[in-house]
Amino acid sequence: MQAPHTAVTLDSGETKDLSDFYKEKPLILVFLRHFGCIFCREQIAELRQFNSENIILVGMGRVQETKDFKQKMEIPQKMISDPNKLLYDGFGLRRGSFGQVINPTLMSKSLRLMQSGNRMGMLKGDPWMLAGVFRIEQDGEVSFSHFASDISDNLSGQEIAQLLKLK
Image 1 (tube, one colour):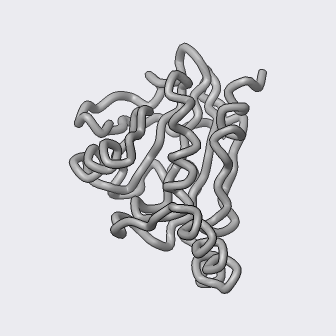
Image 2: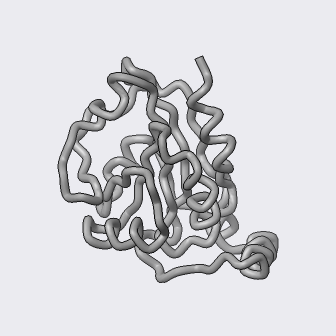
């Protein structure tokens, strides 16, 4: 699979071609579900330490919402604002079924995260959207893809950082 050839809008409001981010070194794109997702917030916390890596997060908020979320969550990586889910669609990410979004196991996982100090936020984006992670090579080839099987199926920060070490 090739990465889509498209312009993207950053949280700063700047528009760039997606290929600008991977033409010199591989890129990891981390697609978030929605800005209130407790599982995404846990993943973001784990990614903070990898602030010098070529990792970009993608969210469904408008530019100002994305900028505000990035600041509130202290996200050091760049973020792409994709309120119309065009990039989500371009990478084949899909909305989850009822069982992938709401079930007793997921509720239990959410409660455990809340007990450990994580919090849900305000819903910004599509609550049915599932997350994903992709590694894009310098030629635009997507060499790794992870499509979440449910709302809790996120790669850890360490797993994501390891993807950059692949040859």
